[in-house]
Image (cartoon, rainbow, N blue to C red; front, side, top):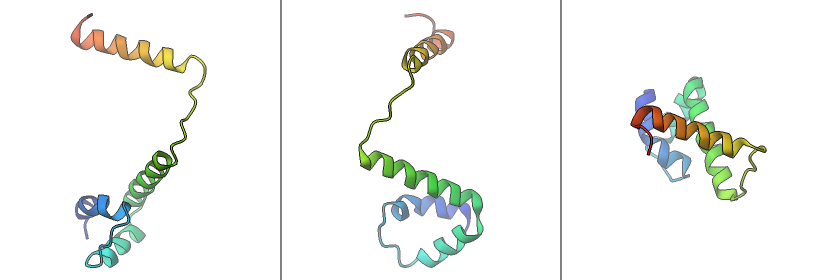
Length: 81
């Protein structure tokens, strides 16, 4: 299995669906491919955080700085509104 083939099947794998015809190939590829392991782990962690439904508190002032930065980038690219 190539990295490209793995990525195509990744959504089903991470969702825990039964993929008996490719599970062995998938597991074998993951065992020897660190970049794909990182991708799968990141997706699993993201799904776990989402399912837990716990919001993450932003540091004081972060939201304002983020909004300002996004507005500035928007203005640079599209002009002021």
